[in-house]
Length: 373
Image (cartoon, rainbow, N blue to C red; front, top):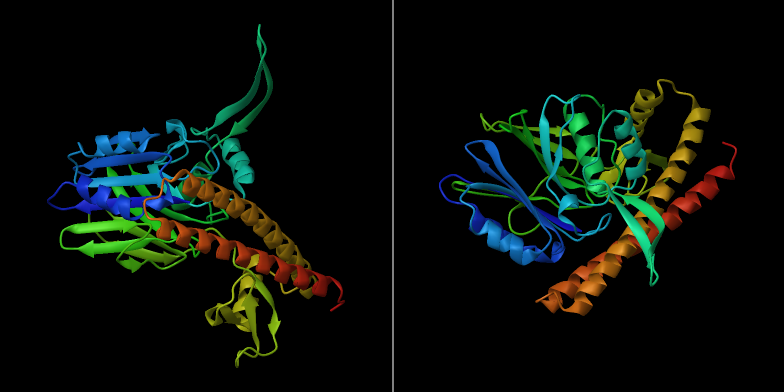
């Protein structure tokens, strides 16, 4: 769980607004910080911190009217400045540079990291974690584990998609993000932002001020929508993009409050998640380029298994987040105990939802594999 924040003010410094909005969503993370200052349309400074006091002291001195800010509860890497956000993506195969802040957990990070390294990307957040045993006379390294920030996987994945070098966002998991796209000299050209239904992203507008943030007053941005704001012309383009998940379809629904002849998306429960058969047919025709029913059934079961594996990973990640939150509550870092309890309850509900969906998918797998149709 992390917090993301972007503040742009026309005539005033952004630092006080950043601090105020940060404190309103502080519970999202207090173990790792970073921000970018922007002056006259150009990235002027990138700083990362391990401790809250250092971050607050530094940001209070900033004169910029535009700041991109991130605060985290570490999940994939410990709180060291080199692994904190914002994450810079630059590579010879890319035409632009990208500064990305991300809230969420990526479940297929190992798979995508391998792909990226084969393309020539070098991970800047990669680190080695060693277990050392000490005797009186010497130290013995028993094992070494390579870790990296899974948000860097998403950042590279997003950059490839934005430049048309990948047809889709391949990252799977919980995602909310803000991305500064610049030329090679750090002049900002576009601001991209979006999220899926697993993580929030709110936009707040007023005279002379634009704020993107994880939570608070304002309007929720649409899920699975990529927003791209032209920095010079201020033109905003919105396009529908699957952010963080592949959309899949399940078996026909016999009757669901009049929804005969429709199918339900796996893992979704609302009425709006039911689609007509012609939409499903088009989806599979586009994906497989044929109408082979046997292949349809095989792919359907395969996708159920894949979804189940994703949920298993989500279950592990949520339990890890819960452990971190419980430790934070026990250590007394939260000033508002009632708000902390609300977070705890919300995460427990999320865990129950994942477990319920796993049970449902397991039932569907057994049902499908036991029939010959």
